[in-house]
Length: 91
Image 1 (cartoon, rainbow, N blue to C red):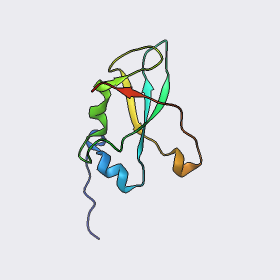
Image 2: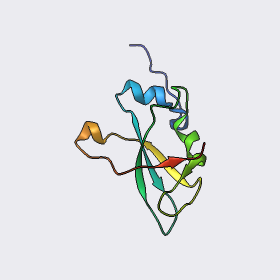
Image 3: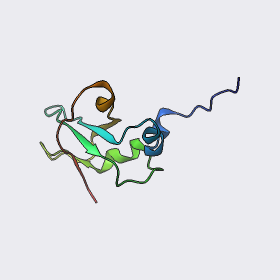
């Protein structure tokens, strides 16, 4: 059996998650008083974008906090869950 190539979780790219059928990201505001969450469609970003690199660009639409977020792939379409609204990022 050929050994699997393993990479640190911090280097997972949008191309990697698109191969799994995921097209959206879940964004969680990490402000102690907010904890807002939203879904962001990532189709406009290139495949080589590292998911964790999107963190500093995220802006919470509830409290306005910039760059303190947790970014994850959205598996809800594959598990029967639903989306959670919209998120915005700085250009």
